[in-house]
Amino acid sequence: LAQVKDVAPPGRIGRASAPFHGGAAMAFLGLGIFGAAGDKASKPYTFDNLQSLYTRLQAISKDADGEQNRDALVEVIRQITEAVIWGEQNGRDNNFFDFFCEKNILADFVRVLGLPRVPKTVKVQLLQTLSMLIQNIRRETSLYYLFSQNYVNQLISTPFDWSDEEILGYYISFLKSLALRLNAETIKFFFNGITHQFPLYVEAVRFFGHRDQMVRTAIRTLTLSVYKVQDTAMQRFVLERSWDTYFIHLACHLRELWSSLDEARRRAESGGDVSGYSLQEAIEQQQDLLMYVSDVVGLENSALSEALTERMLRYALFPVVLGSLLAAVAPAASAAAADGGEE
Image (cartoon, rainbow, N blue to C red; front, side, top):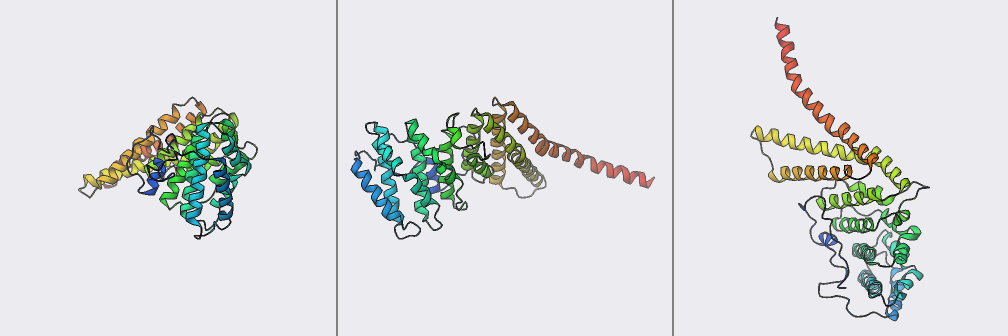
């Protein structure tokens, strides 16, 4: 698909320092979903093709919880994705996506993802599929269908193996593709003001301090997208949640980075071994985090800016400054006490 958007990393915040390797990096580059670079879906699909693929999906997905039909299931999901996006982008026939809705294929995808023993390759293909659908759907009615019936929120809350970098990479790209579609209209599909649930935000901020810079950058971009949406109830929820947990974690993380830098400085002054890579990594993480704090404070949201500023002062700046002062005063006080004792 020559016009299919890729799943690229955000470019605003931070710098690339330690990207994923192999398949996980492809999650951020949008590669792999339609095969090799030269294998584009240039051929037209027919409605009969799509119906045939759906019949195959129904037959194969019954035994999806295992390795037996892994490759066949991945291929069927890939071809259905190609067909649906081809139908949307060519604009000549809305029957493709209407069929996707009528047969509730999205529910089948989410069900398969939630199976306990579904192969990793199937999970990766489904996460890729959903990211590509969200980014390339053009009709608002089609997009609203994808977000309705709570399937997307159910998927966001699905527990995956977070130690698997490839799975995590595609999951984070999926969250980022959702964030790029947030506005005053679509936010109602993600935030439930009655039950006070907002999985997209709550699950995303869990990875705010992940060791990989690409993950941190994507999460910070996602939160900035959320903060910009004009919805009073959602903003109130985000403010309360951030005040209680997220902003505190950010401030503590910044304080830990400062402590790491100070420890590296002391080791260097005493002639100890200082890893240049770890020191540079800490410096870059600090700079990226301060840039993010500046971005949040710069938003036209005074309550959020004040909350973040207070948390940064209380849990990062004041402990470091007061700790440094006390450390400097303590030796002098001890010396004075010793002198007084001798007299």
